[in-house]
Length: 597
Image (tube, rainbow, N blue to C red):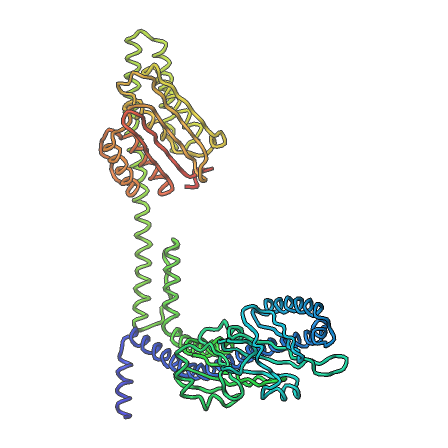
């Protein structure tokens, strides 16, 4: 055995660091969890059993209190009625026939009201001299039955009350009454002479007795029995019948909660009143019950805490050799991710961890050098691309303007030609500015100067603008709007004889500068529009690509310069319909200074 363990230990030591750590931690965790689960299962079973017993006792006690309260209410009501003036008057001997009829009618109405108030319990008053009054029309009194001849009548006189339970001809005072019920007889004495003058009778139908057993608990039922074992009523479903019949003798032992097997429990509790004793049997199927014990939660959390503490100790030991250098590498990588390049880690390890740290340090140094070179190359490439894009715009603009000047000279409109030349000079001085950033006010003014020239080419050109003046001093990229309106002049109004209109809208929207440029020109065919939108999306994904010549070079030039400068924060959308016009929407971040980019 010793040799076997030693071999296994040597094999463990020869494992790689990853397998060794994994086996070590998982072994400790598995032992801790196994101990926790075994201990918790044992505690849970005991607490669950105690909880079930406590629950069945509480339910039984609550039902007993309800029955006691119900019986006590009947007792108080019977006493008050028995010694009320109207009942005492009915039991008097010296009363005229007319007066007796009036009192009987009033008594019937009162007893009928009591029957309604007590959910259909039947009430009757029987005088020993022969008068009988009942408050129900559903049951009929059996006038041939003389209760003074009954075997229990002497017991009624001695104890003042008697309970009759069971079926057959002897039960109750009503004729032909087939239902199972319970009848309570109360002796009534004359409150002046204390002589027994009659009997107050309360008949409780079966449905009212069953209502005493109604409960809101699932998988719980009740059986109410008389002292002699006669079953009074029950709400027991079929699945409890077999358990009840198999364990009847054990269940009848009062006060002991019994485990009937298969998760079934039973409790027999005696209910004692002033004139009868009942047995209340409570049965429950505990298979569906859950343990709701805060202490159990505390114990389980404590066990998990112990297991966690054990794992914590193990983790501290492991991290001293393994986790700490790994976390150090992670933090160094986060610093590199945050552009703090050239980070190195002290290396005091001679195993795989040492090799890992050494490799990280070499990678960090190489990465710093590579990133710096890449930054320089990217900056030069970006600047070259922007210069190329600006040079691409100027020839188009210059050609259109020179064409207008030539047309004006040929038409002998020298003053107009001079005005166009002067405006062209202003525009080129604007273009020759060294900075690519200007104010939005200057960009709009540049665009309007261009449109002023284009009015010499298109006589019925109308320009409308709606500008939020609070945005005019914001920093904006140079030569963005003019290429778009030039596209409208060159393509949108080509061959158009109707009025030509260009609208410019500038507003703040979602914390961005939102610009809409719209014309009522020729629009764009659906296929061409879809292709243009796809090309703009391609530019968004790779703004450094070289743009081939096409009919929409102005729009794509603007899109490329926007995405190069603003990145993903810029948005450009184009909507058009053939023959109805084109709308170009631009959205760029709000900048106070050019350094914000």
